[in-house]
Image 1: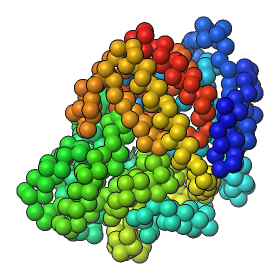
Image 2 (image 1 turned 120 degrees about the horizontal axis):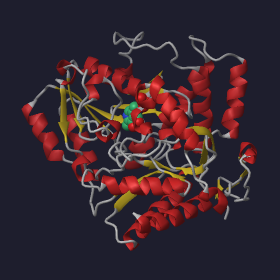
Image 3 (image 1 turned 30 degrees about the vertical axis):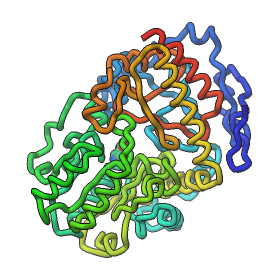
Length: 470
Ligand SMILES: Cc1ncc(COP(=O)(O)O)c(C=O)c1O
């Protein structure tokens, strides 16, 4: 069935069984579904992936350039990707998957969108990097500033990690204090001060912290359980006048999907204001995903500073931090806080970001994400319960997750009660059914405007089958 986004028909569901045709399959007005035939399914093999991954292990640590990709927490053979388009991806063995990772968030309008690719081709004719100001930076900055309530000025960088490093230095520079509070299970990139109880890949590998991080680097980092305001109050009580900032994921994605209690967000806004502490929303994942103005618009709570990444680069490497003008004017060269980047504001990354945001701004985008994600998570939870599993989960807009536990899950300790071994069996089963979820229990899932009702139905049908087997 076709759905309509801003008058545009998506998900026409024209079956097509040859791999070749995928190259032409995802024009905006007719995203074409690929059919996985029974015969293809029987032949599910990861032989080429295995060969490539074995070779990679000799070349790169663990065979990857980012740890969770190695499937350590779910076991089994990682898949090596050949191409992506719309809501689907193909591995080098020719297996096709409905993708709920979306390159870990950026692919919110679908992978390799035709308009983004065309815009990139145009920009590329003028060069790939200027290392000097360009108009595209102004355009994306204006879009970000007008969308995100807390941002009056923005600095573009190259990754979410860089954005979080920059924002931390800025918060310390502005307040003249050094202590920060972060929450257990929240991930703010891999910079030293944040590698304390950092969820996601760190948890997946069973490393509470990382060797190589000097004690001094995390000495000023205080932690509290997510959604626990009394723990935060205790820290403020014992560290009076010392806390520069609280940083958090306004919806956690790096311990699996965990929604905040509204009263928790309200209370940390209040306590930070009362104590001259800056509130930082790390919206690298939630920015432009929960709503066009991010989690802060969705919940109606405005932080002092915000970090962004993923979606604003439309699949190219980007991060950003921004906030109130008086704070941002501390950043060099306007002010004394130093931060720089050779490729920052890169014209290709700016182009992909601009065209991704343009599409998201069209009426109906977030309603569509809400509709399909709700259907997906309800279908998964119903199927899991029907098969007798303890399972709980939730979603907001195009972000979702589920745990193999009865729940409720309010923080990382609750999340760890999930049956990770069962998740691993579920993950492998779904992969064989042509559905790709993040290879860790401690990661959120993502939908996109390119996911069709057909994709969702096929995913639920696959889950019904796999839940019977695990
Ligand atoms: C909330 C959050 N902050 C920061 C980061 C780090 O971003 P990057 O991987 O681009 O360095 C991530 C990455 O997933 C994230 O989810």
